[in-house]
Length: 436
Image 1 (cartoon, rainbow, N blue to C red):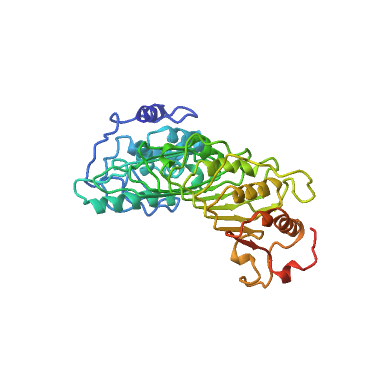
Image 2: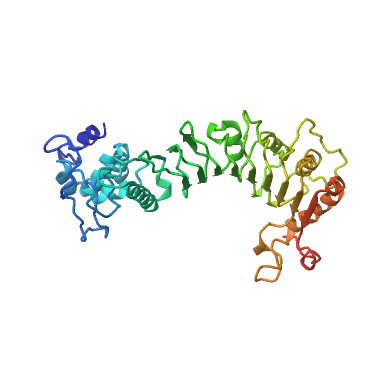
């Protein structure tokens, strides 16, 4: 289909103000040829970039099977640059993006203009054939090294905002993909498809929610996901491959809705980290909705929450005369260690903390950190000699949080539980407040 589209573009005749290019000898030959390709490195390219003799992956150097260039390559190399100027770069880039990936890469090999648009080709699908890996002449270890190095090189040399779809398919002998780390530095990535039956560790960090298409049968041991709304996404979608996860880390700085009730359970989850830190948090978010995550994790032993906010907008329990809510019927009898970073006087957060204390007979340690939770922000461990974020509303909230702990939390902590309250050092704590 991509070949037909490119043929239509090149079938136009140069007439008046229109650019028309004709294919010379029909469609391109898609067979693999290991002989030298006419697409040689050009050190005199006008944009200072070398053209690589790799039609399928022009930005990757080194020897590799090279399919022969299509008959229209000479036409493109002669006229494509002027075509970009006459027709418009946006139009040509759009046409280029509609081609299949191999055809788009071949066009980039014979044209500097198409090469620039190739670096922004939106839909990437990697497998052995696409990467030109010769499985007949390579050993298993060499195949694995070639595959990972090529994919890594390609992704590092592309602007992050260009990628919309990334698909990685790796099936060969006993070479197993076990770790996958994806960072979306831009905002256009929409879909990640992974077919790797032995993948056990997955990490994704992005600026927006993506659709995860994970092969049936995957059994993750460690799963890290970070993007706006990640907590509600995992709880509502609940990919079957997460049923066997042992360590789950969720990061979301725009959790706009309460955490929904999970349709299934994390049967083997032992370590859960939920990072909700933000400049500020929607005041309507109910921290107690996170109880659904605890209910879905009967084997959970460690819970770490980061709820740090620079400005707390939730209803404060300080000065509130109403009773704390009770959530009966929820038991968390495997939970041993709980740490809450950025603890505040938000009423629903205090209610969640009290709920955990009252419904967890296995609890051994509880840490409530009213600071930023990192050594570099303490005057005892950093180089500036004072605790950071002690000005204005933040320090006011720290003092409210400490009051809430003394009033509502400490009386409920049984003697078998070690309570550790982290606060700014006394020297910094006693400084006069400066409201900005």
